[in-house]
Length: 326
Length: 275
Ligand SMILES: Nc1ncnc2c1ncn2[C@@H]1O[C@H](COP(=O)(O)OP(=O)(O)O)[C@@H](O)[C@H]1O
Ligand SMILES: [Mg+2]
Image (tube, rainbow over all chains, first blue to last red; front, side):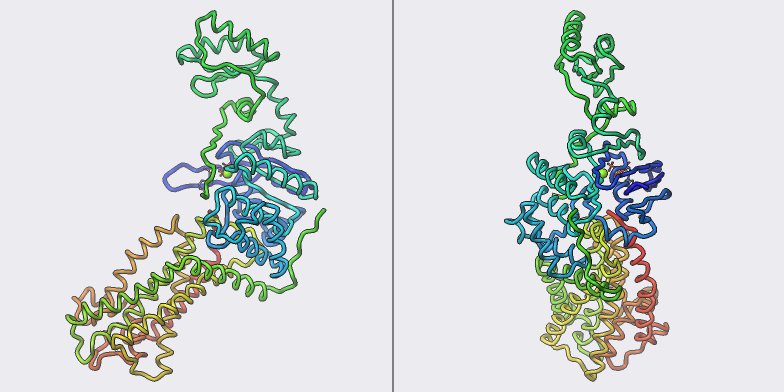
């Protein structure tokens, strides 16, 4: 049995006045001990629901989950003694200082007052919050709150760590800082399950990536395997005039190695063999046919491309969810 | 691998006590950091005592009693009932802030969070009682019973407040936002406290309202406090309804029922909610 193992998780929500939502639709997941696994998926894919189920916050309608052989849904208290969790939105007490928040978490893990304070001091330093430690969290920036929340997940140095979109809303510097903290934890042997909307983040941190959509895992592998599975470079063009989109599509299909697809309105993308050659050919063919282009370029496969390929629809990645708790 | 920190030895009882202490501490820290909460919960009863005494006191004639003596039990009851709604809005706020999600991923007692909540609010309610009593004494209110009866009167008010806090905590976990609790409790509790014997003798009310008032649990609470403080105007005839005849028994029974129903219900609810 894998260290973390979830089988056939199903969770439905029936919000009043709207159709039933299958947040998890038979999700199955395995995480090896000491590895980092990323759950990669767009908004609404079921990432948070998965993390909530595995951190004992919700019970699924059906399915099973074990962490280190312990049944998550039958023995939630035993699970809570071995996990650290940081949800998608910072879960901190606004009226306590950063330091007090961490001491409180330590006391609720029953560490004893002295150890709880000692550990809070260490974490405050690790997350670069020394200056702010004695101010109430109310006055913290979104990024600082996020860091206190993450520090709360590390209080007992848990063998298993769940991080739901840990870097969403962080500025680039904090994001890299956090990646380094996570890498350090993994070097120390912590098993991490994190979720992200960014292929780049999964790429940097994860040993294994599970791509999820509509409540199920639709692909898994290393970052390289996933990228390879959707082919190499892409050429993307944006037409000036939307009525010319079909003509442009014909050109892309002619010079590409696979199906071309409309990304959003006027942007088209196609996998290609030799990037520069294909790009030049596409641009000149468009010019010959009198198709005006706003933009044309090459890029590596992105989450969008993985999604396009795997699901046939574009990923609706939203960056607007940042700084939520602010 | 760096070693995971282990909990200090303890049993279920010591853990429960420790978790309850930590969460009560956190609730009281909020009172210290946001003093407006306490300030308003103290100023409002003072304002009520003064407004009722000087605005209505001149107009409402209570045979055999001055209005202030009659009024105080009513104000006490109204204040603790409204004070308990704070348990509801605070739970709803904690849920919204996600701190409950944090608690629920920790190996702590969920019941302790609720005990911490209701106990912390009992502390606030006790403080506002003390302030009201001081204000009452200043405007001429006097306790005309034995010290023991007086203490029993205070106890029954606080007991009811405590039980009602559990009801509100449950409701606080059942709504989508703290505002819902504030608005709904105003809409429900305002009529409940006013269509009672809290501010005017209920025998003077039109029949439908009088019947409502006689069965209203708030009336029983007011009447209990009034009796125990020795503030019942002489010659008052209690209504025919059983609660009006047996106010103290009604309150004690009500407290027992509320606790038996809402303590387990709230604990179960807590174990499943998530933001
Ligand atoms: N409490 C809830 N009530 C109703 N629908 C929900 C609830 N929580 C999640 N959902 C729905 O379940 C789906 C999966 O949500 P979620 O797990 O939050 O996705 P993600 O974290 O990947 O963005 C979405 O369609 C979302 O709207
Ligand atoms: Mg999410």
